[in-house]
Length: 331
Image 1 (cartoon, helix red, strand yellow):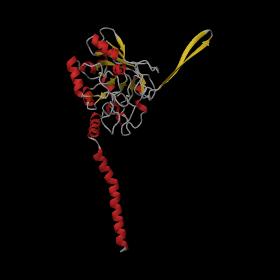
Image 2: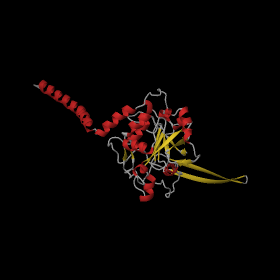
Image 3: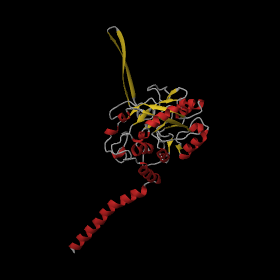
Image 4: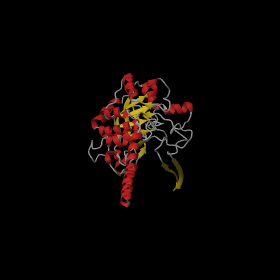
């Protein structure tokens, strides 16, 4: 009788352990949203692991060949250059200042020194450029996905911004969404879809090509100018993740925006910053965040074209996760 009881007890415990192990897995699988499943599938499709070899550290900037650089010179016709970046400042009156941005910290100390009759002025500064304020480039070690970085690397050390030491010089294209939609700005929270990109190309006779840098203006800074500051963490315009398939097919080299390229509120409850993960980790594509595209938009209208030569020169920081950057468009 005792043996039977022990047998039944062990049998029940085995079933209980089985249920404890299996049921959560099944439940978790069922709880994944359709958006999360779609994102996971897209990540696998866009993954450029091994495309340029296991030792590659440049990602999609490999699309910028010497011929591509030379061909971008044909867009320099007026000799007019435009900065696409903001001054680095803590001034609350600066057009890119966002009180809600707690990530982008900056301090600047100016020192005067009298030495041998000369008055020297030096300065010390420190900056945390990632966030929603400073114009910067994200390197390929800026984040990982499922514990891995671009090209299936387990460590971020070899993917620093110093890999872009020779700069990025190629054709740039401006997709000006407010211009497309006849508005001063796109209301924060909008998800940019594939049709927006295709429609702009058709209407304004531009074509996104291999090796191009794609810049998307949402009118973020115009919205701040007109309506005042809002919490950018809560509402921001960015790409729907489906757009990344189009950008992969076109083989662009770099993606940039006057926002952070991702949108809020997020489409995928289980996945934060999907555009950053698809771009940086899967595709190996650097991102430009918080650009000032207002003057570029004006010049593109004056010259009746949204194509130009674009120069980006990040600081050579060993193992740097990015760099403040002054991107220059040349018409």
